[in-house]
Length: 236
Image (cartoon, rainbow, N blue to C red):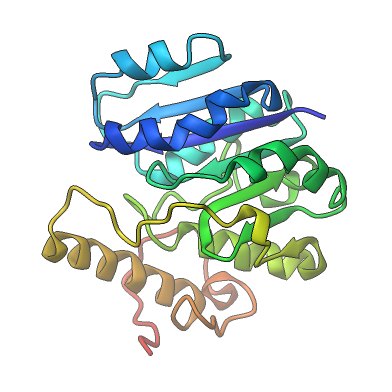
């Protein structure tokens, strides 16, 4: 079994080093690491740290955002591994998780999506389940959720509509040892403004907020998606 990792990162290389520590320590557990640096950071220490790993560095000139970062990573990795582990750059997995990751995935080979008790700061995708989630070539996560927030919940609800038995949440082993509620370089006002924009789009797409979408299909079947139309959704 081959397991690869995708990590988008921006403006917090110090936290990225912490995130990578247990992964590097047990690097034999993983086939490839796909690292997207959306902040043009100095990765000198990261490159030295990961010198014995198979790392793909995606170094865009501008911030791709999480959905595009995920999509580019999945497009590259989907035919190269069996599972893809997607991590926030500000979490730290337990060594127990890293050591037992192969056992966990083997025991859930028929699942498509696994997540921990902290929802989507850590989640895993079975590459065999990606074909049904590809809404356009190389597009799995809705890129209208820019730069981030709600793209992972949207992905889960779409997969839920395909086959909810393929999703397992709340897996303790995938719950990070270190979790930061919001370790962002943005001030709170900027964060809230960006979140309001993407949440509004989510409500337009699903008829309600992320906790409990109302529509059975995106946009209630009224138009193709993703879209950035101006329809008003239920903001509850």
